Length: 479
Image (cartoon, rainbow, N blue to C red; front, side):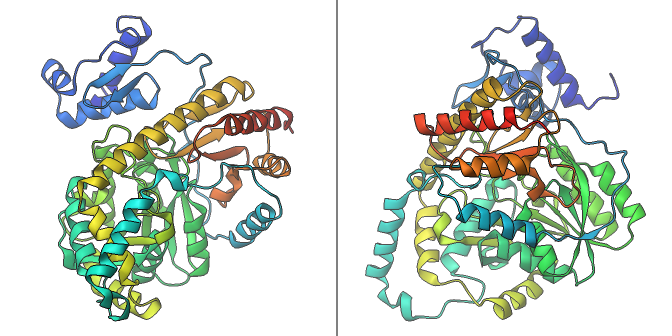
């Protein structure tokens, strides 16, 4: 027991109290500061323990009220199984994902859709459409020359300044001059990889990981080395350390520490620090994708791995695609020690983003309205995740496993009995339902029996019926 991390021992202490009924449903947990005083632990340890209990569905954070014990689910569902980090890593591969993605898109376009659980974005009504429209109108009224004036190569100064200020909440201390505005996070990742690696190089990635990253690697002629990743705690530092010892040509590591896509997991702060330190020791750049980090349930900003980076070895990439405006395709990055090279690549590859959207978004991001929007969006996504998880727990076949994230919009579902995610995907399409099969998120063949379900759609009777239909398809899909 003593060999367990302190946060895990603390979490297990309160898990037993909840399971034994000492802490009853709807009863308030001791506050984080009370845990610090009572158990003589750090604030970080107390927070990690509470978040682990949240991951297990035992407690929830309520705005300005603290943590409360949850009622047990009507039908319990175990979390997704942990990976075996002792298993030998496969060879780094030229990933071959383009054909699978092309086939996925073609099949989706061939069928009308009534419920889209494949799209990792909220519905348009969840975003501040009217406020952004008014911000654009103000820009054109006050500065009509915007549409006919050039913009600095790294992006508009107003947007870069507000992004640098916002990054302070995630523990990042950067100046406006450090920020490079990009066409979404995809371009940011593309630029980062081109800056630090060459065709034929090996890039360590999480397994499973977002298929868009695998597409980038294939497009750049780079090899993907998949590192086991926990559905609870993120990329295995031990497995990555072993990969450095056995694969001498790793040129970069790409991770999503906060609400990883597709797992939804959050890497504990101590692990983020270990990851940054390991990559620095190995002199391998760490590329961090923080697209989902702002969507945490409890409104407390999640530290970025970049916040533990004293040397500029972490390239930080982010986007407003999930949090503010999917239609604007605005992202940004902090290039660390590769800033000058990334700025040159950005200019050569796509030139600056158009200025109107940048100035309008800067106006909105700099206001309290953005904070209020984020609170509403987080609440909505949590409600939708909880409802989706309840339907999955109640209606998917016995043996289904599901890890509950504490933020974001994605659920990673492990189906029992040799069921094929691709077969479920194809049958669901025939019934007007889109879902992302697990085979899209790896080149290893390990996730054929998984589905990624997005909770971006608002729950209506039609959406509930679609999830029940999906449950019946999974039930009938045993190989």
